[in-house]
Image 1 (cartoon, rainbow, N blue to C red):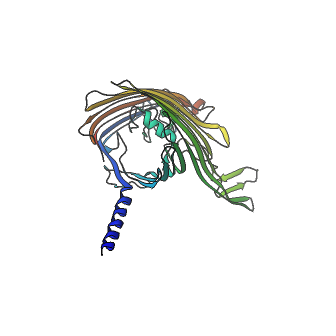
Image 2 (tube, helix red, strand yellow):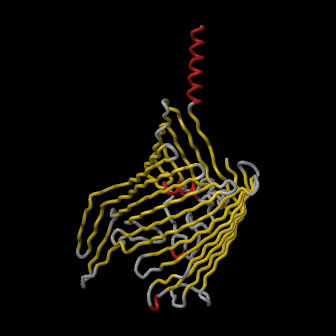
Image 3 (cartoon, rainbow, N blue to C red):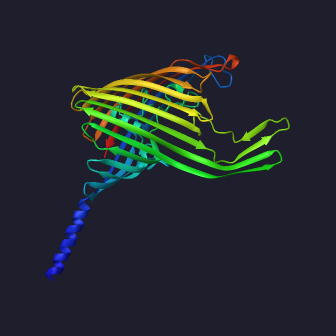
Length: 421
């Protein structure tokens, strides 16, 4: 009897110890508030293919009880398991939330989903959908903490409408400046050694099917081929007392030949291909591209305030024609400070240049600025107010009667509440 009791006690103690060595955390952010927006785009008199007002300007305004102005609403689960010997397993699953639209979990909204291993004193590795090295570096050095408002030229907000340039246009000054996350990704990150750490990223999603060609009359049909989405990246950062500096580089390649292509040859020898071979598109990103991205940022904590400096550059070009490209670079400075123990404020200002499609395409200068503040009701809950503006110079596309000159400006504001859990 005593042996049985001892055995049960030992099993219970072992189970308790095993449970203590594992942990799962549920976390999230809910961010809602009142959001307003004004955008305007001016076009030249030569533009006859799009609707314009008498003075050639297009305007839009909007306001709503919206969401995720200061920080994207999300729900996440993360956990660790102690494997012994300083080694642990870890995982993270995180999805977007849309509290103001009634959607509990947004479709196709996976932010992160990965499993990894960590060795104390060495570092960690993980596989799955993860933030890129550049995004992690931006998150650590952005005075606005990657909010979703206009005015930030490093982490630009997606804005615009059918009447105004969209966020994916360099001429609007709000081109997406880097890749935030990637799927099919292996990441390696070292521990901190004397203030220095480094990491690497590898993206691989490849398929190659046998390519076949069939010709019937004057029509040739090609099926199969290569689908190759890959990339790599490096990052490093260094901390010296109150000074922090980080840099990251990443490059992605997309090859998409695995599609059914029909080519018809006319009597005069002209050929028509359907679908048209994919090229770079400012609106969609397209396929068959080479995309190179670089970021550097630094912060210094003066005690009464923290200063920020950032630089980002990106160039994506069509593999079939390197003269068909889009590129963008921007720099930004800012400060962030606690005015009182419960009131925090920040300000940033930046500028940059965008160029689309090479010869004959616009080269425009843009700028943006942003002001924001937080009033902390507790460690988890704060009220916020944010205002930002973006403006570009004129850019001209085309020649003669087909020439189009455009400029873009936008501003938006938000007051809301953010709760973290």
